Structure formats: structure tokens, C-alpha cells
Image (cartoon, rainbow, N blue to C red; front, side, top):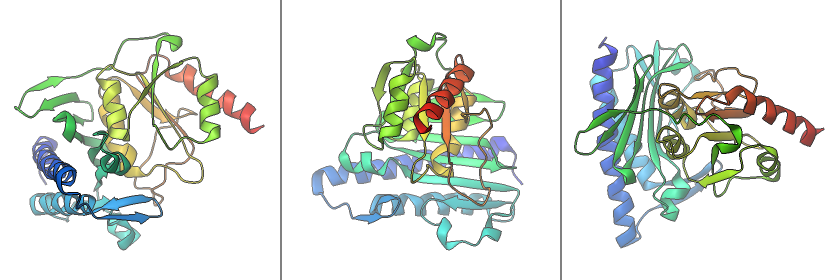
Length: 285
């Protein structure tokens, strides 16, 4: 098996290729309006999702094979048996995070690739095509931002450490009444509106925001929404946990990430988790 450095080089190349392909669909749709959209239970799927999904799987499998690696993708996991994922390493892939933002032309969409071992991410790519940036991280190796011209720099979260000074990054949609009540009672009042989870976490490691909260309701975010963004945040100095402090786990047999999840620059993380639990207990009580 290749070492992690070799695997990272492959993943970065795949991430850039997928980014160019996805952006070509985004630009073509602006001019031609030919994006095929199908509404499914978990949200819309476009021809771009499917094409980029095929590209990523083809490139990873041809480079890495399937002896040591399994491949869990948003677009294909339902067609695979649970036994398929009983491999030492599992790739968790979202070919288009933020499909609604892709369709609505906010530009806030991303590609996620995460390599998971023992239910935890060890390598991650988050590509943001419209920013022409790719963020990558390995466990214990830090987070880096790579630009289209090949420039690479290490990246860190902000050092803001007063809860009232922190900025929450939130969705324009996907906000039910319970979630809005939670936000109303948290000490951080500043908000920044951003689409996909990958782009939200990018704003935290770029020091434009400090906190992201996910609160499941009738549905929940999935493994492929969180695995890659989690590692690029934590390796940049942030934290990403359940409200009770437990780490997220992936490839558990249930792709849903239920409950309350807190992502932050780390400085007020425990305080905000405790506040969120207290507020929800009052709301739900």
C-alpha cells in the first residue's frame, strides 16, 4: 500500500480535476441552462453530481485499487452492501456539497474527499471551485490552502477568544424554528451567511468566521458532509464535536450524524457546547 504522502498527492490531483470538471458544469449551465436536476428525498441531484462522482471514483480506484480501500459516495452508497465498507480504509466522498447553492448560483459549493481509518478521518480534501482553492489536511500534519497556480500555505483558525466576539457561519435555508431559537440565545450574535458545509468550514479556517452549528431535525447531515471539513478544521487548530464533547465517528453503519454538532476555532468550544445543551434543554422542556 502507498504511504499517506503518496495518497495525499493522488487525492490533491483528483480534487483539482474534480474542481475543474464541476466548475465547467457550473459555467456551462449559466450560459446554456442544460443542467439536469432530479429531486430526491435528501435533496436535488444534478448531472454535475453524477459526472463528478464518476470522475472521482474512477481516478481513485485506478490509482489505489480496492484491496485496502472501500469507497463511500453520496451517489452510490445505497447500492452497496454493508460488507463493502469492511476495509482498513474507507474513502468518504461528496462530489458536490451544496447542490442547492450550485443550482441557485451562489458559488458556495465544494467537493469533499476524506480517508477514514477506524471511524476517524486521517486525510481530507475540501475543494472550493469558485474560490479556486483546495484545502488539504492529514492527521497530525496540519492544514494547507493550495491555489490554482500551485501556491501552498499553512492555514490556522482565528485567535478570537471571547464568545460575544465570535461570528457564526449559518445557512440561508435549512433553518427550522428550534435552530433559530438556539441561535437567538447564544452569546455570539454576529452571523455570516454561507452555503455548503465545506465552504462554511473554509470561512472558519480563513478567519472570516469562528463557529458553525449543525442541529439535526427530521433529517441529519451525512458522513460525507462532515468528514473532510472536520479534519481541515481540527488540523487548522479548531474543534469539531458533538455538543457533549464526543468526537464524530464515520463508517459506523449509519451515515447520519444525528444530534447537535459544534465546529469552532476552539477557544470557546466547551463553553458554547454547554450553552447549546442548556438552551436546547429549556426549548425542549
